[in-house]
Length: 245
Image (cartoon, rainbow, N blue to C red; front, side, top):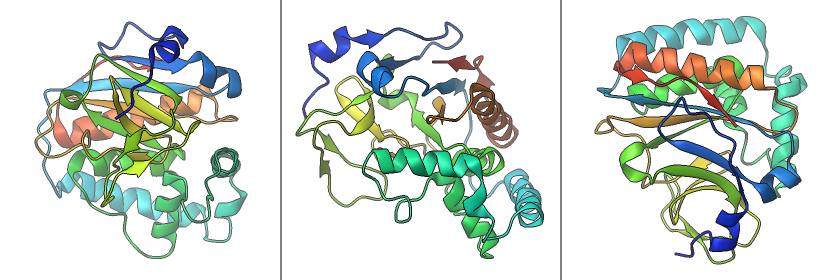
C-alpha cells in the first residue's frame, strides 16, 4: 500500500487540541481547497461494548418519534445541512443520490418506516447522534491506529478496504481520505475502513464529527457531545475533552 509520502506530511497543518492523546490533523493541501472545513473529535476509553442495549433501544424509539414529528420524506431535501453535505459530495465526484450522506440516509430510513441498522451499542449510539444533528460521524478503534489521524488527499494507487466491501478499492489521486500511519482508515466522510472498525472487542475509540463547507463548528461540537453522551450511557468509558481542527 502506498503511503502518504514525506512531501504530504511536511505540509501538515498542525491545528489540534491537547485535550486528546490522539492527534487529528488536516493537511495544508486539503485546507487550501476547503478552507472552512472543520472536524470535532474526542477519544473514549475503557468501554465495554455490547449489543442491543435497552438504553439504545429506548433512545432509538424516542429519536425516531421526534424525527417523524418534525420531518416528512418530502421535506428532507429542504434541510440546508443535508444540502451542504450533498454539495460537498458532488464536488468530490460522489453522487449523493446513490451514496447518501450518513445522517440523511438514516433519517430517510426512519421516515420510510424502517429502523436504523443495529450494529453494536457504540455504533448505534453515535448513529443516533448523527440523526439528531445531521452530522456524519466516523469512529475508529485506537488499537488499529498510529499516533495521529490525517485528513488528506489520496495518492494514486493507494488501497482502501471499507466496511462491507468484498475487495479493496484502488484509489486515484485526490480522493479525500483519512489515514493513520501508512493505512487509510476512511474515505471522507462516508465510509470507514474494515481494519479499524468498532467491534464488541473495542475498548478505546476515536470519534470524529465530519464537517463540510457550510457546516458550522457549533454543530460539529454538538454532534461530538451527543455521540459522547449516548456512547457513555450505553457502553461506559472515560471521554477526553472535545478537540477541534
